[in-house]
Image (tube, rainbow, N blue to C red; front, top):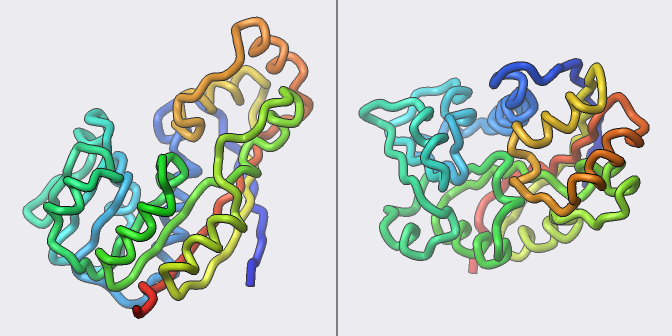
Length: 233
């Protein structure tokens, strides 16, 4: 069953923490539903450490993977932490890992996978338990409506179907709104937060027109949460 909730934030984009406030909230919620206290954890798209920083139990080993060196450099370090700066879809990466991990987790990252089905299949062979939070195509829905562009983010129902081919899982959809003082601040947030994945498909004139004509004081986001265990063959 899909449960849908809306959470509203009053945030203005003025510093790094504001740019990642939503991602931090998503990571906290994803972790809060995990009760098994897994000891070995693999985090795909680990970024600057939103998952690691919010784990409330003791762990023995944490492996983080992210393709952005700048993010990896910001990730907390420690004798129990190992960080790989590379593509989390890489077959070479998975061949070097030491599965099964007690938990494979990914928050606000899998929407950028080039072949999400192949990645889900790999993940199911790498863990005892999985937890995932993924931005879906309802994110920035009003922007796409005004601009006439199609979303490049995955559809929630299609993602659920793919995960159910490899995991026995439960899922939940949550919607969020971030409010801004003006449209320019909202669009700066899109660029600086990383939610857009750096994709740009409007020219300068089209972007200016979109900023001027955007009708809301907020941006909307939809996140699919999935928790489960790999299906038995």
